[in-house]
Length: 163
Image (cartoon, rainbow, N blue to C red; front, side, top):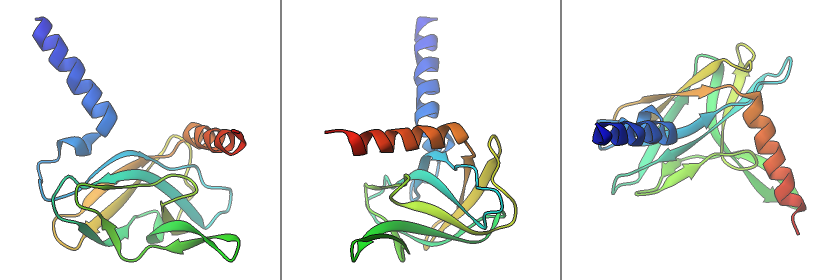
C-alpha cells in the first residue's frame, strides 16, 4: 500500500513539473513544460506566450513552423541589445539543441502571436502547434494567467534592484 502511495506521489510530481509532454511516447521529439501566456491588453493586435522546450535527443531539432487559431502569424522572438536599445527580433531558424532546451520568459525568448483574432483572457487557454522539420507536430496548451504575469514582473523588478 505504501509503495502504491509513493508511486502515485512521484507520478503527480512528475506531471506537475513537466506537464503532459513528459510522457511523450515519441522519442525523437521535444517536450514542453511550464507553458503560460499573459492576458493581452485591450485592443492589442499582438500577444505573447512562454514555455520551456526541451530536447532529450542526441540530435538538434529545427522548428519548421508555429501556428495558432488565435493569431494570423506565430513566431519565436528574442530580445537583443542593438545600438544601446533593446529590440525584439524574430529567431530564424529556431533550433532546440541536442540534450538542451529553449527557455522562454519575459525579456528573453517568447512566442509572438501576431494579428490576434481575439483577446487573450485570464483563465482561458491558447493552443500553439509547433511543427519540427522532422517528426510530428505538437500542440502546446498555454494557460492565460494574470497571476503568472504579475509574478514574472515582480521577479524581474526585484532582480533589477538587487545589489
